[in-house]
Length: 275
Length: 186
Image 1 (cartoon, each protein chain N blue to C red):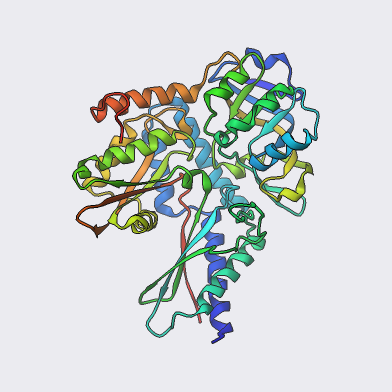
Image 2 (image 1 turned 120 degrees about the vertical axis):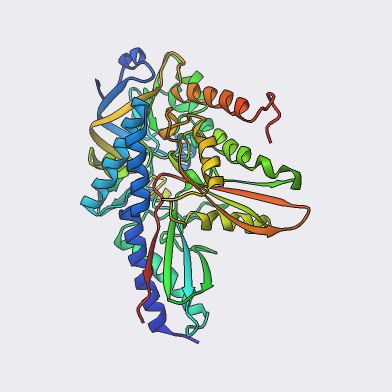
């Protein structure tokens, strides 16, 4: 069944969410950067953080993307009970991504994995990734994901006896990554579920507000910051701004752990779809 | 603050890791695909004294919209021929591997710009032209005029590497923190 009105409304909302996410940092993310700039003790690191804050202000002033790696959009939809899940949902998101690519503008980043041929409009086979869950309101959330931090992400199938080693696995991920994922980073950690489920949880964790951490998240955060990698890998107190954990139960013989690394530009925005 | 102007010469050999510099003149963007094409077909600009910027900008209507650095380490294995050809400086983020540190010795430097700060970078830049445009916006070689772009010397021509120094300290701390004997990490 074709539903052009639904697709068009969703395309409009997706385009608006992408423009918002690419140009303006969410308030909790900006606050985390500002707090870090206030408490950082390393002079070079303070200078890097000041440059980042200057860039964020300039992007908003000029209404341009914060970073040239405008990422690939990861899209989360909530569907209220009266709207059926149909191909119109996916068509609407794809059209919204195409429109945003021209309007914001976004860098065309989507290519064939083997030939590397660029599709030119940020839409392709299986791209963008669209995740649909039931909800009260009809909303679209976008998480544009840049490659520098995505490439530093890691998944481990730990042993059931290694639960205490999870902070070590997360810290090791940043030790290996160094300055490549543009620290200070945010770390989404998925614990449990299945091989694929842990990775999905880690990415969803990046949607959580970063102004609070529970005791476990804080413990991991402190362990990573003790490494002293600092902004851009040039040294300092601020390597990670927040760790967010999402869990699922898992097989009695498994302990999947995924770490989705997110650069300081934790870009996300939610827009309600108006029908 | 040391002010550098392209084409660069032997003055880069005096720079030290950690020095703050500004760069004015012409630079050329290049990422993975452009490096591979240059190795196959040759360098389309005069390499002696030139500066290569690891960057895939957003370009619209012949103008640079935003143009921050990309992760330089992806080009670790693709860089030697550029230094051999006379490139004097690389600009990027995150640092490069030990093989590049060796290749830079006595010849060229690596300059770091703050990752993600693409709006700020573009404020110092004007687009002048393009090579290999068929590679697409992110992978083409864009010719860019820069005006006093602020940079930090990340790797100097003496073998000093800020990133490696930080990494070594982080590694020691990691092993202490988690009581790991060398070589037994997860």
